[in-house]
Each structure stands twice: as C-alpha cells, then as structure tokens.
Image (cartoon, rainbow, N blue to C red; front, side, top):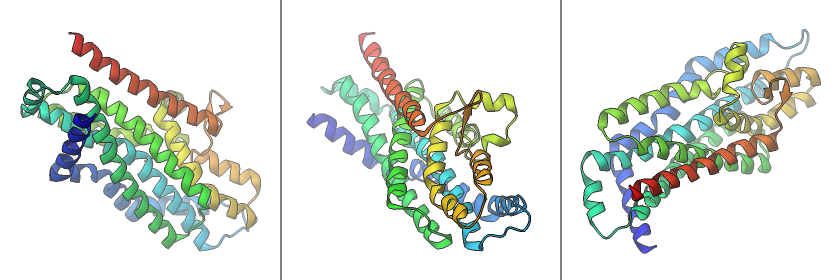
Length: 297
C-alpha cells in the first residue's frame, strides 16, 4: 500500500509538472468557453427568444441564465472525459521514454503500477474538473444564478461519476498505446469528437433520427443529460413561474437534451445514473482484468 501511495504521488506530480499534458487538458474548457462566449451563446439566445409564444416576454436575466446554464453543462460534460484522457497519457509516456522498464525491474508489483496510474489520473482529473466547475459557478453567478444547494451537490456528483467513467475508459484505451504518435492521434480524436457524440456541442435533438438512436447507446450521452438537468433545473422552474406554459418547458427540455427518449420511451434520471455508474464500474473491471491477463502472459 505504501508503494502505491508513493507511485500515486509520483504520477500526480509528473502530470502537473509536464506543461504539455497539463495545458492540453485545459484546452477543451477554454475552447468551449470562447466558442460559446463569442458565437454559440448568441445563437442559442436568439433561437430561444424566437421560439417563445407570441406576446410572451421574459426578463433578460432569465434568458442569460438559461444560456449560461447550457454553457457550463457543456463544458463540464466534455471536460470530465477529455481531461481524463490527457491526465492518463502519463502511462503511455512512461512506455515511450522507457521509465516503465525501470519500474518493472524494480520490486514494484505490476498491480501496484496499474492501480497507481488509475488513481493518479483520477485525482488529477478531479482537481482540474472541480476547478473548472468552480469557474463555471462563478460565471453562472455573474450571468444569472438559479441553482439551489441540491442542484450544486448533484452537479458535483455528476462530475464524480463522469470522471470515474472517463478515467476508466481512457485507462483501457491507453493500455494499448505505446508511442507519442498514438498519444497525439487519440488525444485529437477524443478532443474533437467526444463533444459531438455526447451532445455537448450540439443538442442530440438536432441530429438526424438515425444518429440520435446511435448516440443513445453511448453512456456519455446520459452523463451530459444529467449535467444539463441539474444545471438548468432552477432556471427552467423560474421560467415556468414567470408564465411560460408547461408544454413549452417540456419542449425546451426535449430540445436541450434534459429529456432523452430511447426508442420513444423517456429515460428517467435514476436510469441515467444506473447506466453511467454501471458502465464506469464495468470499465474499471475490464481495466483490472486486462492488467491481470498481461501479468499472466
């Protein structure tokens, strides 16, 4: 156990000392913030106001609160996974520069190495994602705060589950990587593609019917929906109090992916938690199994 703790400290320190890996992990939150702030925010704002029933107007702070909630939910839903991949690249870099050979000829057990990589990546991702969450909450307070204490706590719980899922997924994929080129390729694919397939960059409701059915088989889709539900619940409730008809609220939830429908049946929030948590547990088990099989070989 003491060896594992030492290795976790070593891996965590190396990640934050490596400016390349550290700043790469911050790219996604930065890109999303700039993208929404300069372009998509105005698009969503105009789209929402144009869709309001004729004769109904809402205070500007409510509209800004809705747009801001969508922004932070997108940033957090994507970052929890993309940052996990970046922080887990240390495992591949140790293979590339030969450090793993030195570690394996030492008395350190293979199980201790694999556990230390996973936990160190988990801790690094938690630090960055909760820091991003803090910045997002500050931004929300500026544009329009409608979150209750329970919303914030549930948002943090969503982050924990998404980080567990992202770290397990990245651990399995990185297990098979061994070169710097592979790191760059996987990093580029994940950073560019994950936000689209999980519905963070564009709502799933805007996809074609065939693509919608496909992404509903992906657990990350439900992670995004959970974050959206808890980030936007307060502002949507306030809009209803301001006179927005319930059917319009339902339409908004459908359009913003708060409501997901699997082949016509609405997926409840407990089921979303079950899918995301179960997938994370399964991926962790697969990672453990891969390391056990490698040890036997």
